[in-house]
Image (cartoon, rainbow, N blue to C red; front, side, top):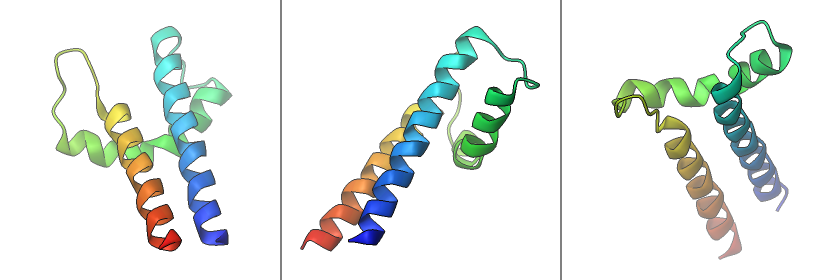
Length: 84
């Protein structure tokens, strides 16, 4: 059960970081800002591979949405595997 809890907490933290990064990108894009730098370091390893696979839809970047969906799917898979 500890592993399931760890995966759930990790996925939730990553989801919050991705949402925060997406929201902050609308307002500020200063890479010297410590909060922006931390969010970039935490989320870029997840978002960068998705950006290589997914094309941009005009000016919209759907990789944060896809990353969140993948993280939720991982949570569900781990929880269902260990609950059976």
